[in-house]
Amino acid sequence: MKTLYLCGAGNSEGVRLALTINRKESRWDHIVILDDDPQKHGRFILGVQVVGSLDLLASVPPGCGEVANLVARTALKRWSVRRRLLAYGVPFASLIHPEVDISGVTFGRDILIYQHADIGPEVSIGEGSVVFMGSAVGHESKLQEGCIVAPHAVINARVELGDGVYVGSNAALLPEVKVGAWATIGAGTMAMRNVPAGATLLGVPGIIVCQLPCSPIEAASTEPLQEPAALPSAV
Image (cartoon, rainbow, N blue to C red):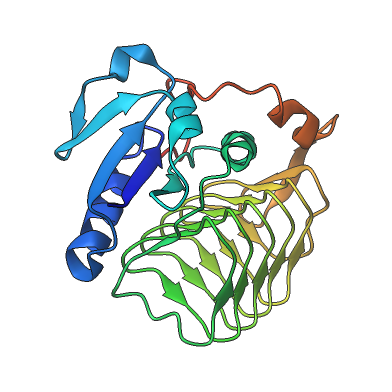
């Protein structure tokens, strides 16, 4: 008997993705949701119950479960939760919609790829990354670990994203642009040239409006699972 543990109750699209995959492939006998917010425990999302906190993963017998990180509101939050999940030692399940063509694509563990995403050949998607519905990743592009490509974003050919890059909804990156680690490309922004690490780019054409003052990886180690109530381009 194998159970899929979906971590994060704030992403019903992720729950639907897991259910769609299981109907097609019958990979798990049970699917449940884990969340650290006790007010969510006992709730049902699309018929799947929130059964408790992430700490329940400590009692999963070897070979009896897989885990999927549904937290994707910010790259920093996703990175933080992924660090916690790695400590429990439960294997990651990548959730890739059955209709998405992934021929010629290489990817690591803990990947989420939603329906109607368009992934070109010779694309590399790093561990812990997310490609949301309606977005496009052009051929020969490289996404490092923990990247998030929000709905209907367009990443053109041979683009390179560093660790933890967030590309907002309806943003566009021109071919061969390189984006440094932990940069943010705002919703509706067009990136026409390389973006330095830690920068936030906004507008058409995109301009840098701020730069991270400290290491986001250090900040991630202290982030709780519970997400803020509202953020731009949240899913």
